[in-house]
Length: 378
Image (cartoon, rainbow, N blue to C red):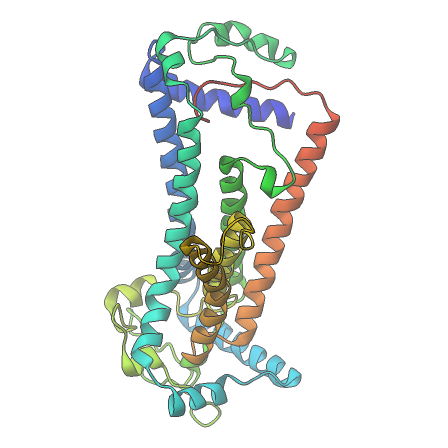
């Protein structure tokens, strides 16, 4: 049943391509197919990037803000109590130490506001372009221009044979068959993209569920009394005797935006702290780099600039999530528990995707499943 549904879904997608490009031009079908793939991928990534804004819209639409704020405060105090019971509630002394000895709030505030989305977008664009580059090299443009023989469907789908044979879209090309493997290194760049993208998307949407079910007031709002949202409702808890956190962006500003900007007040969910998407995305970027490029190449000489470039990028990818966690804690935007929860969610997402690929590869190894392939690049 699942295989038939997958086949029918591919049929629908290919019908759209043939309908837009026409049945005669194979090259035009290839271009339209790539454009459709790019459009759907970009739409998925963009929607996933907006989970914070989507959670804010849902809360503002379905819940009275006063109740929303009380739930967020209750969850924040529960996290503080939990950290104190474990002896890891060090956010306040860490911020005071940083303010006394390091400072540089303009840099750290801008890092919090801008590096998080920018680096993630760079990594997503990189693996997406890498995937499309590989697909373009798999297209036999000359053969598409000359035409190709249609391919009959697997025996299980014999009723669709007349429909397939009437379309010039389908052609037999065993080299373009996509066989899922459990080992990441054995995957094609297209499969590696889907693997990494699936981990990122799943972890982001799991964090979205956390934003909905466990709204949490960040440390910076625990001692704030005069900060209001776009509707004029008080956002902070005003617990000035219990906490001494400083809202560093509100006090020192950043080069990109401020909490008082109307767009930020309208779109941002002020209680989207648990889990930390900053931590999830930063750790995902490090994981992506390590999985794609791995350790230093033994074939490169120590005198080679490429060796040192790879070394800098490798250690930089490891340091990036560490610096990000330090930034979100020292600027009082997250508790350390938020960061730990983000790492747990990323690990769960990776495990889910990995075991799905492992299950699928073993199933394909035990079943002799006929594969419908195409000269077109997907």
